[in-house]
Amino acid sequence: MTAVSTHQMLLDPGMDLTLRPMRYPHFFDRFKDAIKNTWTVEEVDLHSDLADLARLSPAEQHLVSRLVAFFATGDTIVANNLVLNLYQHVNSPEGRLYLSRQLFEEAVHVQFYLNLLDTYVPDLDERTAAFSAVENIPSIARKAEFCFQWIDSIYALRELRSRADRRAFLLNVICFAACIEGLFFYGAFAYVYFLRSRGLLHGLASGTNWVFRDESMHMAFAFDVVDTVRQEEPDLFDAEMEQQVRDMLADAVECEVQFAEDLLVQGVSGMSLADMREYLQHVADRRLAVLGIAPMYGSKNPFAFMELQDVQELSNFFERRVSAYQMGVSGTVSFDDEF
Image (cartoon, rainbow, N blue to C red; front, side, top):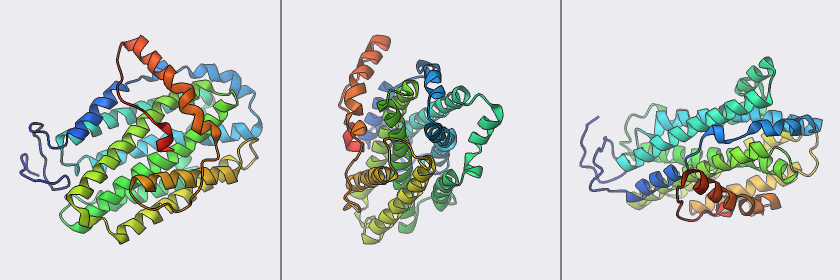
C-alpha cells in the first residue's frame, strides 16, 4: 500500500495522508461535530434505576433482560466492522479522522453497556450468560449472524479495484448504517424510551440519549460516504444494487421482528408486537428515503413517545453540556428525521 497517492476518488486504493488541500471538508466537519458531543460513562447514574427494576412486572423484567443482553455485544460488532473493513477503504485522511473518533465512541458505548450489566445483573452467572447472548439466545444470535454475514462479505478485500469490489463495500457501509446502527439500535432505543414514558429507568434513558446522538452521527457520516461515492461513481448505483439494499433491509426488519417477538412474548402492557413491527417498517422506510430509494412499507410511526422524546430531552442536553463544560454546540438536531 503506497504512502502517497494521486487518486481522485474516495474508494481508490491507497493511503492519502494529505489534509491540505482538503478534498472532503464535510468529513472534517463531521469529526468536529462529534468532538462537541463528548461524554463519559461516569455522567450516567444507573443506580437510580435499581428501585424501578425491583417493581417491574415479570414481562417487563424479561424485556429488560433481553435488551441488555443485546447491548452487551452490539457495539463491539460495529467496532469490529469499522476496524476490519471501513478504515482501510475510505481513502481520505478527513474521513479516517472521523472513523477514529467513531471507534472511540463505540468504546465508550461498550463501557456504558458493561456498567449497565454490572448494575442491572448482580448475579455473575446471569451476567456471563448475557455476554454470551450471541451464542445462547436465538433471537440475538440471528441478529449477530446477519452482522457477521456482512462483515465477512468484504473481509478478504484488501483493495477496491473492481466495480464489484466497490459495490460490495458500499453494501457493507449501507448495512451497518441503515440496518444495524439505524434499525437494530433504533429498535432497542424504542424499548428504552417506552419504559421511560412509563416513568421507569431514567438512568438507562439518560445514557441512551448520549448513545442515540452518537449513532445518529455515525449514520450521517456513513450516508455522506455513500453520497460522495454516488457523485464520483454514479454507475455503481443501479437497479440491481437498489434491490440488494431493499432485500437487505427487509431481512434486517425480520431479524428485528423476531427479537421483538422474544422481548414481548410475555405480553408487555402498552407495547404490542404489531406496533413494534410497524415502527421497524417505518424506520426502514426512513433509511431508504435517505438513500433515495422508494419506501417498501408505507408504515407510520405508532409510538408517540418516540415523536416527543427530543422535545423532552434536547434542551436539557444543551443546558447540561454548557454548564458543565462551557462548550457551545452549533447546528440543529432533528430526531424525527432519523426515526
